[in-house]
Length: 299
Image 1: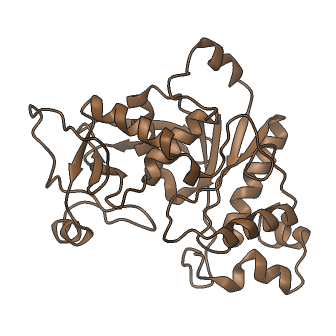
Image 2: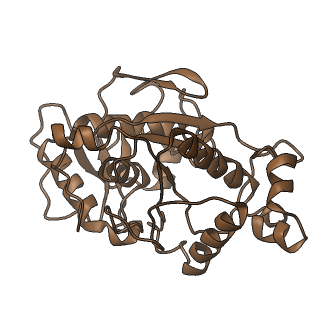
Image 3: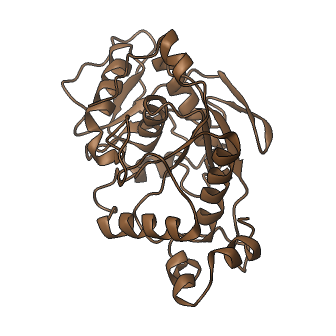
């Protein structure tokens, strides 16, 4: 592997000073117009900064990810006019660029969190959490996970958990109640979240032995030297969680730019099930990249 979790030194800081953005499609369906606008924004910002754009294939989930969707995403993005300098199809100095091939790096990050007592095993099912979360906490939206009630959280004076590996249980990052996570979003301005109020202990490794999104994204953004993350506004709370992981592991924190979400005709958030608004369907219907960028606000 060309990346190393302990390689953040003064030389690295100099190397990562130039702009590095990223595209991070998940191959669980066809890309739609919302993806197109966000990825086009990332491309334009990288181009204007004179920096590099990295494409990372976020194929973590083996049950939902499909190689054909990954191939179609690359084709659709190139058709739209987006170019990248590093990725699974072109290589680069921080390969591999598919998350399914980066397990060893995630295991190393998990081990460091475990050694510091920052994660603990959780046997709660989704149903258990849903029952307990009939709560005063804000209900999750989109892909956000529900507020964890702390059922399996050990006492503060309990010995650190020990394990040879993460398989078999969920591993949760233990947040510090009341810790403020603030960042200046380049699109939306000052953002402030409070751990324990806005979100609880969150999953970093799933019981089916799959790295959770928060740990994988934070680790990859650090190891790939990403300086700015452009993504949808539905991930603002995920950014707060990832900043906590960055703090815990000594990762640098990139800048963030959270795009507005495109809505459907009834005001609902676009999802991959809206196949009529997929880039693939629009291409087949005769739309051109220029038409899409103007008509749907991705110019």
